[in-house]
Figure (cartoon, rainbow, N blue to C red):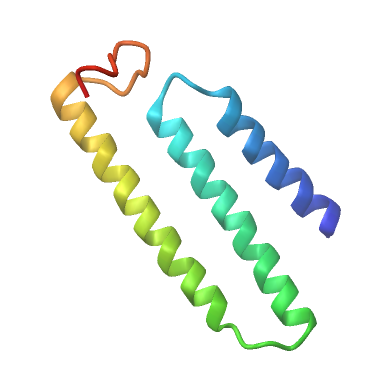
Length: 93
């Protein structure tokens, strides 16, 4: 089980590091990494019979991160017309 979780986590990190063109693919890989971290936290807390309060805090932060990412994506699409990173100038943003 731990091998499967580590392969999934590192594949999410690899996609996040290698994909630099679209913001949507980057956001999806970040959400995938957060879900894997959620699974790791649940397994760890379940193994040692701890409370799942920290999992709720992690889910709250991941929802806030997802909402912030989607709002940035919508504002970029409305202002520029697409979500390609290569057409943006850092001086304009």
